[in-house]
Amino acid sequence: MPPRIVRIWMVVALATVALATTASGATAATTVGGKLDSTPTSYGCVGYGPGVVMPGVTIGCTIQQTVAAPAFSVGSTSPIATGGVVTRFHILTGASGAGTSRVVVAPRVLNPALDVVATGTPQDIPLGIAGVHSFDTQLPVTSGQHLAMHLEFTAGPLAGSETVGIKWVYVAPSGTAGSTAKKSGTLPGPTSLATPDSTSANGEAMVAYDIEPDVDGDGLGDETQDTAPPTLKQSVRARQNVVRGRGISLLITSSETGTVTIGGLVKVGGELGSLTLASRTIAVDAGVAKRVRLPIPARRLKKIKAALKSGKSVSVRTQVFATNVIGRSSQTQSKTVRAAKIR
Ligand SMILES: [Ca+2]
Ligand SMILES: [Ca+2]
View 1 (spheres, rainbow, N blue to C red):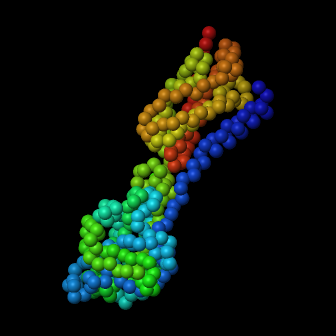
View 2 (view 1 turned 90 degrees about the vertical axis):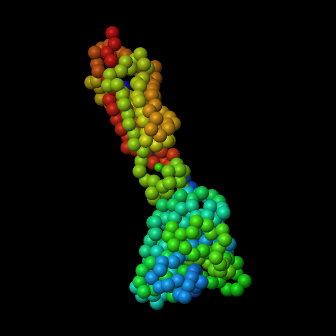
View 3 (view 1 turned 135 degrees about the vertical axis):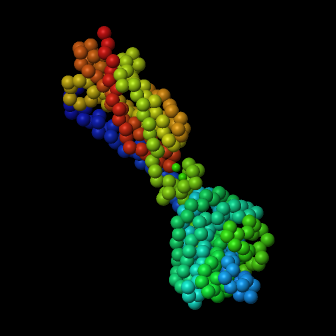
């Protein structure tokens, strides 16, 4: 085999690997909720303030945007059109004279009946800082569910006094669509918002939620949270009868459902270069070992047979990598199989 041709084969093999490791096009992340471009003018929890609860007593409320408000919003969070994982949430708060008081905020998932099915880890906001506050979270959501924001006042001289606490709802001009539903309670809070304590017409909660796809359904957002590649295990018998088997046999396991791509190079002792074997890609289930064969074409088997008969050593170096369903690939792994001598 002229060395020049061998080199071309190797370039083709590497290009094939590069294509196979490119991420498959998953649906991009979306943001639902408000555009956060209106200054909050109202307190979302009006009605539970001083005189209702004694100072120092922790109180809170959950607000869910119930009606799309196209005049001032990118859309309602009610209900979610496409499921995934909420990976980040944003809340815009207005100026506050609340001093050292603090509030905790936590995103919530509600079912279609508006029962609370999940609450994200509460995050702390110092009330003295107005602006957009963004927090990472990990909250799976399915289509048809709703997103809501829960607030509690937990510390400082104004704890338990919502009406002088934090502005986070924009009140639209009269006649503009939009409303909120709310209910008071402490974390983990009420289990149902189906019968709100009160509603606030024309209010837009200044909150937004980033939802990433979760194609493999593991509860991790595929773009920023589900970044680990699958783990590949490859097991081969070190010496195999390559001629009789018309190829080599491998036992492969991927930690994640997806595919495993198997290729290889045949090295014939004493000669420069190698013979590249066409790679094949097979479907695998997570954690299930699969026996696969890397075939060697008859034309090449003939050369291998001749080399073995003339006393040369022949080996196959495998090139194997696993790819999960969201397109992340393991490193390519190699093992060497020596061809058994033939008579
Ligand atoms: Ca995922
Ligand atoms: Ca995953």
